[in-house]
Length: 622
Image (cartoon, rainbow, N blue to C red):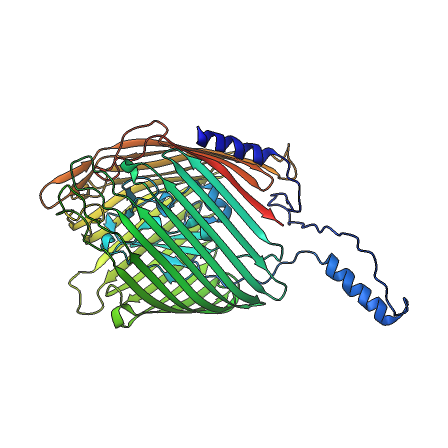
């Protein structure tokens, strides 16, 4: 009852006219924001100078300018490089507004819209999340402002927990869909206005889920900047991973013309209780941990603009586990290893630079890590050519982290504007004598045709024989193997009619590959979206409506262990999203598992029943 009362209060507050000094500006993307300045008349002071003197006139002009000076846009802080999106139809890129409008609560919610990705989670918000690309785990890499996020949590077995990326701190997120790996480029939110930018988000819902978020950013007229923000959420349901998490970030720095320096820190404390396993397997152990990322960055130029640019970053990542007792009754043989009082720290130094001239863009990076007093150098280089008829990219990296040399090339050809062909190939092989792995070749071919504003495409995904690293975070008894994988996929993206669009992706994997585990035979995600500003009725753009319904189907998945095989049955799940924009406020309602089915993403861990989340996001310029 309290949750519904809070929702009614939020709705009433959003619809009530606001009085005060906050400036509310129309959300019209077709117009430039026009900030207003309230001028309070001040009586003129007595002055001993003659009124017609030059000094008196100069003093009066300076005072008036100080009072009447409007808001200004300052030079931006440096941002990391993002690759050329060689996709058919809509690229996998989201700006800050689109990230919130997508309804995604974690990175995995976005990754599951990519052909070739199969995601797994054991429960609700705090559950660990893993994903395989063409059947292989650990092939999703995340770069936060150019710093690669390392898998420091020992329980993950060398894989990154995809639930730990804080989407709310981002300004933009781009997925580079290589045939051998997915690279996630996350750019943190930057502020450019002298007028303070404040945002408050409040959400509540089922499973006693509460999410509170606030951010503040301000620039000064000499280029100084300050940004702070925090998010806290909690949920209560032992069947679906209950607990709470607190994240805080701060940035300070200076940006002038084409150069900037800034310092950034992001810390996340997570407390997760044990989760029940309904197959009489050991439960998911509790976790009390802290993740920290901080860096100092200096940059000149913009990687997304023409000309030369360069950046240097000194960063540090830390994972600190303070769990009192990770073991529980039920047999400890399959529990994750005891990582109590674990502290893992790693420094990372990055130097990047590049040059853009017309359709050509080249760049290079040198990444230095220092794990356990060692020194690991990982150089990489990229070249891109972007034109409508032919666009191409090439990427090469020598990774000392996993003793692998990667080479990748992608070409997109559009002989006519409504036909597009894409081919991508990559090769990963050991570059020294420390590994026994063989060379792994990956391939993606895709063809698409445009029907009005809708793109229809399909293709093949293939990977040569490669080892499988099991997701031991769910059960250390899970085993891997070696297999060759092939799959066929189809994709629909774009506008169907007026303000209605569709996003569909489906994949069917080779049956022999699915028998070895961690791959469904078929998986389909489809979404229909209505996104309108209703400009005929609200020409200033101060109203908007976004509604969507998504359906996800996955056939059964086998999870092999050292003694037997566990099975996650097939499931079909619906999700709904409704957002109403009023000026700078957004009322949100999200419903997951609308049909209230009982299903498992990972065997034994029951996923949440029908779960409603509702609240308001509100931005202020004051």
